[in-house]
Amino acid sequence: MKTPKWLRLPSPEEDPREMTFLEHLEELRWVLIRSGIVVLLAAVVMWTLSDWIYQQVLLRPLQPIMDELPSLRIVTLRPAGLFLALLNISLWAAVLVSVPYLAWEIWRFVAPGLFKHERRLVPLTVAVTAVCFLAGAALAYFVVLPYALRFFLTTWPDLAEFPLEIREYLSFSMRLILSFGIIFELPILSFFLARIGVLSPDLMRKGRAYGYFIIALLSAFITPPDPMTMVILMGPLVLLYEVSIWVAAAAARRHRKKLPKSP
Image 1 (cartoon, rainbow, N blue to C red):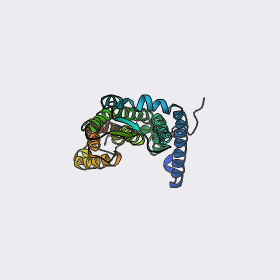
Image 2 (image 1 turned 120 degrees about the vertical axis):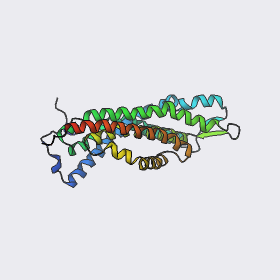
Image 3 (image 1 turned 180 degrees about the horizontal axis):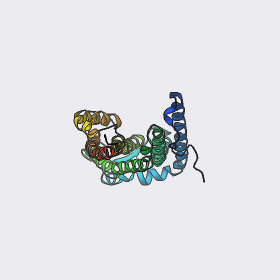
Image 4 (image 1 turned 90 degrees about the vertical axis):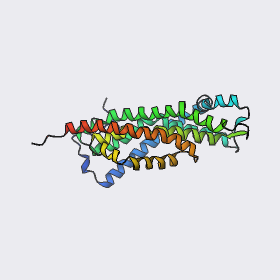
């Protein structure tokens, strides 16, 4: 069966560099429309599972702490609070399950600006992009989130009661999970840019101080407004930056091997 045009990569015979700026904008518009439709359909499916996701997935990291602190309970302060919470769960979960397709759309949009040998990397890049995102989300869910919750909720257990508002908890949890998923894309992005000669490991080493400064700003922007969560996020980001230097160095060596030798 023939692959639909909107799903396949441009063929080498198609010269995308001839596209005008408006044509690129039109293609971007269709990328956003297709991605939005997929996320919306996934959200409808996730809505039917939202109660199970809430009970069996999102409350699981909190359950051991609730067993230790009888005063800790989940509350809602609005009549529509539970409905809005389940709606948010559906949307967050839809984004998570749509990551492979969204990664394909992003790299498919980038592919027309690449050369023939660079386009061959796109399917593999899509797969690794999805795996890296899910690995970061899993690390946040199984390791970082339980640690952060335990630190915030059990450090001073006798000083206050803990009526935890459901939307605040969901916002904290999902932002942390998605943030880790996004930052785990740094090595694959560095590999791709170094492979096509746009990024060099030497530049990353010389700009390490600037990179750490950007990491601090990024951590403050994507995490809830507290310094502890920011520090928790900065640690893996710094480590990923260093790993990205090694990855970029390996990709740059392969890129140099493919360059034509001077006579």
